[in-house]
Amino acid sequence: MTRIALSRLSAACVSLLMAGVSMPAAAFVLVTQEEARLYAAPAGSLLAPMSVPTNALPAIEVVSPQIMAGPVPSPVSIELVFKTQDATVDIASFRALYGSLKLNITDRIMAKARLTASGLRIENAEIPSGTHRLMLSIADSKGRRTDRELRIQVQ
Image (cartoon, rainbow, N blue to C red; front, side, top):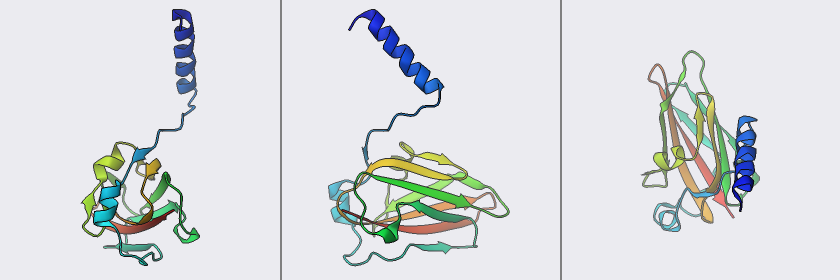
């Protein structure tokens, strides 16, 4: 490729970024096959999503995937909404634990997720086939913490 062509390609990419056009992110491994085998939820344990707030605030709402709709294909997109009534969300307090032995995958998620005080969005997370359990946790500025279990059944 010539220098002029490379220069034009670079300029086009910068223009797209400046215009706010986002390119789809490459898939990343959220859970490995080995982790799925070691930490998997027991068979037949796919239940309705459960929220166990310690002080009723804040709340974690799962927007996607729609768990009750059945198995989802991998890679998976996960969208969470955080809600509070009288405090702000402490985004530094976010934690994500995987499986029955609670493998901490927070750093893996944070490397690829878009996290704000209003929620979290993960795109293209590769998860092996099977049933998977994530324990999600967030606290507010008053130190109140909520845990939300998310079970995902992947095709």
